[in-house]
Image (cartoon, rainbow, N blue to C red; front, side, top):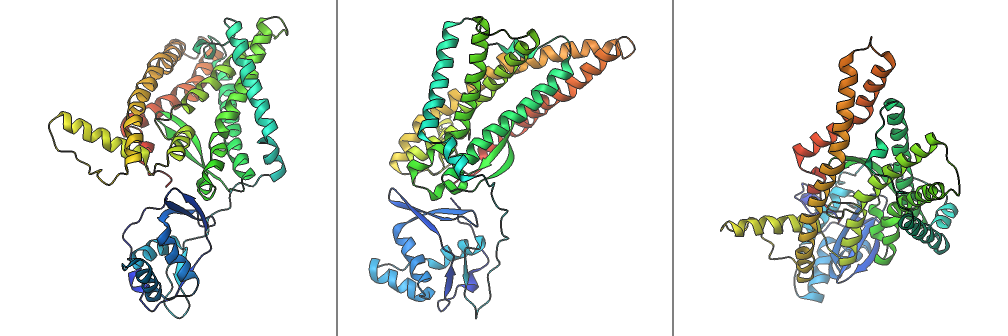
Length: 416
């Protein structure tokens, strides 16, 4: 949700001022109400009594009259001006004509538009049953067919490194496009606009789908848009695994080059699916967890809890005051702290066991080829140079960015 901060609009919202409140959605969420201004991409969580203030203002009461109505009903005078200052910054409230106007936020770009009929069909109950059957079939087939699931060596070849790099780069773009298309289409099926942005999960560059609008939906309707990307990844992975199983059992006969390509694509997809299960960073599953437990800022609260725990071990006072955290969120934070720690250990294991060996193996082979010089083998030299640019350098840059910032995205605010 939108966090409240200091503002410079206070002089506009005088007691006699009348305020225009842009229409908003509202969804009860426990003892709070989630308010949403979809056009402005603004969402915040307020107690129900605070929502009454906005309703009174929208009905035509002045600031002073709304405060008086609140005082008459609840016995206290609310700090309404502070709330209006924050909403004024977002451009969803402003003083009516006859008084100075608050600065208006620029109109956001429209979200990604997809056909409603197609989106609804892709995420219908029948489609979800089909996806589950494909995933189950792939799991059973892989379990009964040793060697069907490739290892990391499927991404390493001695020759044609540039060609493989280009293929994997294009397939990576396709993987990303399908993943984000799944989010967008599932959100579209729920009537929610989306936008895309570039981000990072630990050392891996990713494209992120902004589905802030799902906060305008009832909680039970938020899960499918959040999980749609993972579902699509699993479906495509299942199709690739089933292809390899059928080939290994001689049900089909793939040419050697096609088999190598399918193996490389399968492992690439597995590398994509596994990090999506890391809900110790802000992945899709993380937001599923926070939605299920109604946590406002699970990542930030957990990191503060861990800092406080380390400080107590050292005999120091806790650096962060968490006394206002609700008891039900405390229970989630304590459990999630283990996920946070163990998850990062698992990610480090993947880094040491797969990513770094793969980078080292490629780097060693590339260095040998480049050190021999262009004249000795022109095509091999160009092949190695292409692999260096397409595979090694992007991976190294991702690792450097992560090592310098230690997961910058984990310090960002939750969608609250």
